[in-house]
Image (cartoon, rainbow, N blue to C red):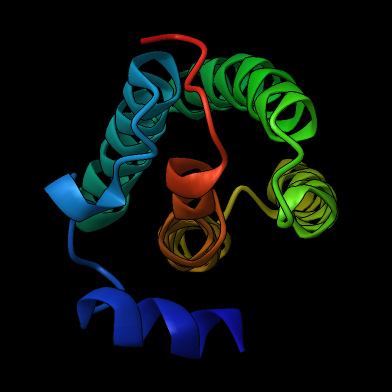
Length: 150
């Protein structure tokens, strides 16, 4: 379902780089910059997949960066939605938990297999999840009152 929503949102092919669009804005400059950073990290991962070769240390470093960015972003975004009494706050929190499960499942599988297929599957799944989440959940921050970081 999330994959279908992401395809409708942008019509991207799974291996297409994530590109920030003006209509993705939450109108919170800090959250939007964090989204852009997460897009960039996913694009770096996509470049490794497209190259068809990678160094385990490179993937591990990228995943550590992703963990830090995602954790910081989720804490801030959930706090903004709660503070602004956004009606999507609970759905946002639930979807964040889902994405953390996706990341952890991937990391476990990748540590076992070190396979390009696993890396590709994670990139496709995570890219679609991120795009769908920004387009269908995060943008609701626009209409939830004051925007703390601007």
